[in-house]
Length: 228
Image (cartoon, rainbow, N blue to C red; front, side, top):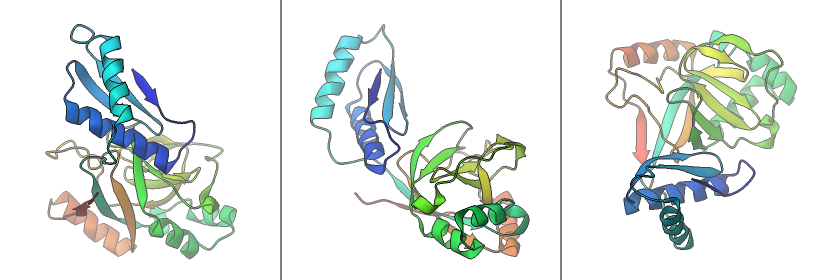
């Protein structure tokens, strides 16, 4: 079952999705197998041997009538990012296309508090928005065959973090030393839909130093619970 709230990528639409997800989880409805929030909809997977579509539709409709303005447990993350040198291969091109200096691009990106709209594409891969209109860039004309893991990318006023090395067509403007996906970690996936992220610029030496700390399991990520 899919409950759709709109046709656009919009913060308020996405928060309506998050509120319904939290409400459905709080009810512990029989037969629900999984909930998958996206930019503008909530997909509800259910076991038809436990509950029927009519009963589920009735329960969800009632929740939509009385959905509280609460989005459940959410976290705020401060994530270090190096926007320099080899860690930001598309920075020069992006700044030229935007008609801004690299410093202005970095300032605009780092000043934005991003909502985690949804997860997808790769394990732990977050879709983040929304950037100012100046960042409304099309995807690269020629996608890369290999994008390094932990690359920070932009396109269409959104940002993503490539959690694994893979092909990709977004513009790479930085790289974080923090693993958004780590199969050896107790909780492999770092963030969740509904969380918020702000990026903190660091230098290349700081990037390498922090990366060593991450690999040695001595680095603590700055995070806090968001008060509703």
